[in-house]
Image (cartoon, rainbow, N blue to C red; front, side, top):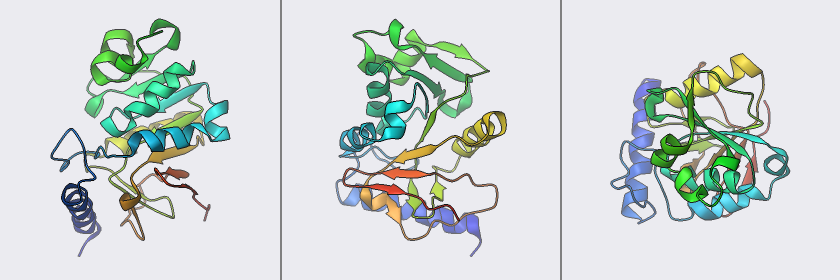
Amino acid sequence: MDVKEEKKRLREEIWRQMQEKGIAKFPLPCYGRIPNFYGAEKAAENLKKLEEWKKARIIFANPDSPQKKVRENALKEGKTVIMASPRLKHGFIIIRPEKVLGKERFAATIRGAFTYGEKTTSIPKPDLVIAGSVAVDLQGHRLGKGGGYGDRELKMIRENFGKVLVVTTVHDVQVVDYVPNEPHDEKVDLIVTPSRTIRVKSV
């Protein structure tokens, strides 16, 4: 079986588990998405406790539902949020905390970001990158939903700014022993779940 087929099978297995076990939450079904899950808010709260989060002033975040609370927390703490527009159709959106005071919850949604944010094709250097994942392993290999946009974003940041810490927030069932990977796949440095924080060891 080739790597792409292995990736497809793992994605489908994670989506199936999350649906059948009642872990996935709106938007449903979770197939074909970065799956939202019960516990996403707890993972976002666990992320807030990390020193890397506390020091960060600019956060680059994916636009998916399970990371909505992460984006909201960042804005409430006075951090600037750079959000990739869905499928990168409109480049990036910069949401400045001073422009969304009291409206952080809405501003953290895709609609809110388009309402209050500024569209741009060039971004400032982020201090922390938040990536969405379908699955991730303890070596930091991540699996997105299959469009390649997450890898493109991570590669663009690395090429423009060098090494920036990458975090993914996922449910515990999304942490697996092995994610099939290819040389061009980008990795994460930190995995935060509702129950634990995993620091990936550099190989």
